[in-house]
Length: 284
Image (tube, rainbow, N blue to C red; front, side):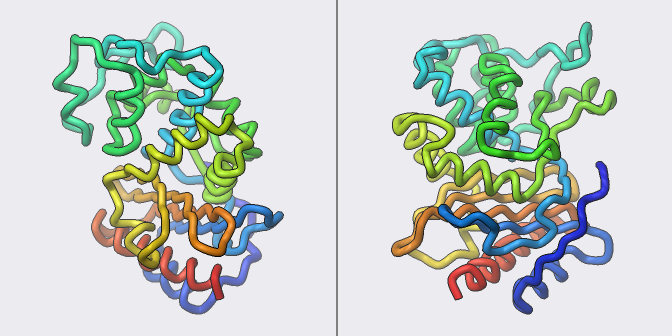
């Protein structure tokens, strides 16, 4: 990953302490909170540091799928074959996925059959299904995912360019990378209706709000908020990004990206603490 630009933000003492505890001696923790209508982030810690995306890459795929459907270019009711072998982004190479790496056994149980595309889109996000993701990405295409990122105003530092477990591409330097600021921009662009029409926008939010993994950002925020989030995790990485609708506030996008030592449980708990401190700073 390329070096990140210098961070000139000044987080509150509580947020700085939460970030420092989570970062440890060698990690990187990025936090961005953006509020609809504001030009600059309300909260910002290492906003442009690049992180491996893990399953956050499923967020722009979700938007791409639903807006293609809204345009009449993709039928989410159509049943598509569930298969575990895919073309790599490296020409001439193919790869087979590993069931043990997936958190979605239901899609694997459907291997060799056909499943409605919309059902796979839902599993891709709510239970972070990897096999579901690659089947959906085959239907959507990386070009449309790139268009979503561009329409959201994301920087070139964010690249969603390969399927999950496409290690041929990864080894060739074709990798899925994100920044916290770009993910916050993406969520706000969605909330503001700049990525799709009302039907697709509402559909994306409903799916995010049905998320089953809620121990990161949602666990750190006050009760009574409407939160749609997407998590991502691999070894030494835990991320969470959320679109928050709170009484009396415009839509808020909060991204916490963590590439740091420790256990998965420690990083998840740390994300909740960081989210709580960021929300307190945002609403002070």
